[in-house]
Image (cartoon, rainbow, N blue to C red; front, side, top):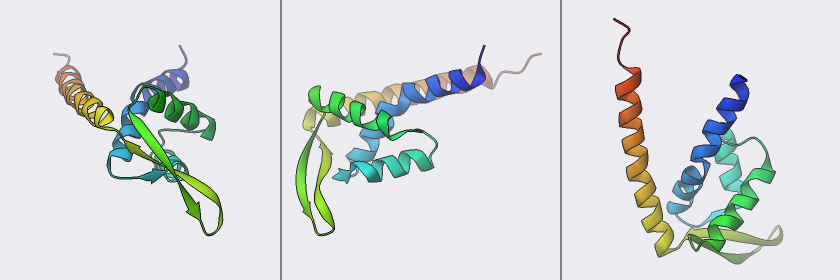
Length: 111
């Protein structure tokens, strides 16, 4: 089994949750999301983010608006919809449950 592949799959499993969490802080530009995700070692390539944003938008979880930029073309800023906010709250509860369950399992010793 390939360790690196398994690590990538683990990250992919929580990437949507992380993206929604970043957007929940307020309107955000995609490249700022990419910078934060890259710094946290959650995403490696830019091509991963944009299809996810499109899928989340099509699911009604986020929306965007275009904002004129003084230093180039207009920028697309994302924000959560009310449905996205509810969805994120549900994911946060699931995340807390998973963290708790995982800690219960990995904290037991082999005695």
